[in-house]
Length: 116
Image (cartoon, rainbow, N blue to C red; front, side):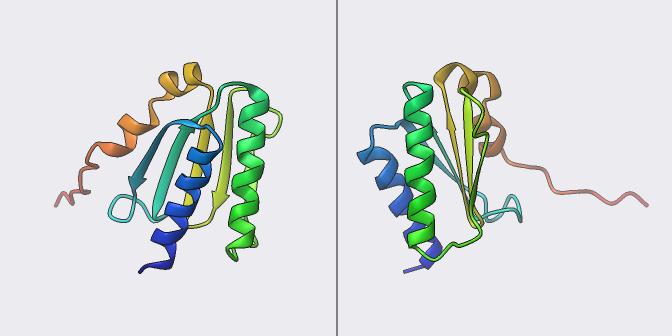
């Protein structure tokens, strides 16, 4: 099995077992060079989102991702945990609906055309 795929499964299972809702994974391998997977989930409150982000950060570190970090630590609406090859967004449901990351990343990105 692929190590990054296994890490993605571990993170999804961690979010699920800690009561995150509406967990979605998006394969970015053919869409972006920034990461292989994007995971989006919702938390029930700002405390829940903070706890989820800290648990995910610890999972990344336990799996050998040493340069990972949390963005949005002062936000009550959104957290981003950068696990290098796996990026996790945790939103409150209202902000998640506003940003619609699932829609943005699930649509096919057209290939760049060269005009001569």
